[in-house]
Image (cartoon, rainbow, N blue to C red; front, side, top):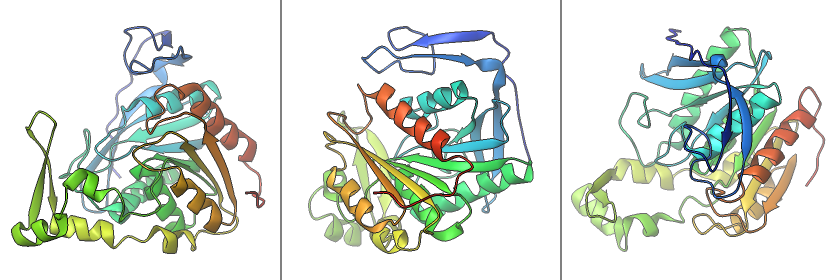
Length: 298
């Protein structure tokens, strides 16, 4: 697979959430410090099976193990939680790769409303690339839609033993009316699409009937039943999440056999004021389970 890289040559910098420095917790309101050596970052382009270029940033901490970080709906590899997780993993001397799914961020393709399984295939292209580069993909981590994607990946490919689902949605039939409005089924059948607008009234993105049916046809419950028992899964969810209710996390806990559940009290969907607890829980889970055989735990 082709690779296009550049190295950011800069000294080690300390980022603070109250500063104006780039990348890390600019939007967080709680102090949050990380030291990150930017000379270890590489921009890598990985082609997916459709020939589209997936663009990502590789944080090389020198470890053979690598954690792949997956963003959520209408997001990118630059979202606060994903960047903070990469920095926290780097501090733990664990390499990571954060990338944009096709149709998002810098990657090729057109944004699609559904395409959960297609994004799981994008993730597979990434894991195959790093395995071909003599790296071990130790864990996959996804937030929101990305949380669903990493679970689908685990149910299909069975080649990653640590999976972290951050605020993923269990019932994909829920949450649609909030975005598309009432009577969305009738409207999309009539016109073939629905254009979603921003609060300002400007165009945001188009939902096609095909992409809507793709989402409605994706069964998370059925997929999770196919996750191997030796695959260790951590679900993290905020108790004050108004985008995806915390009850979804409880449903995952019921059906995934080798599962650990962590609820962050008071946290919203993007973990705005809880970045420190989020990164601590995720990194500790990965460190504790790296190179270990998973055992069942609720």
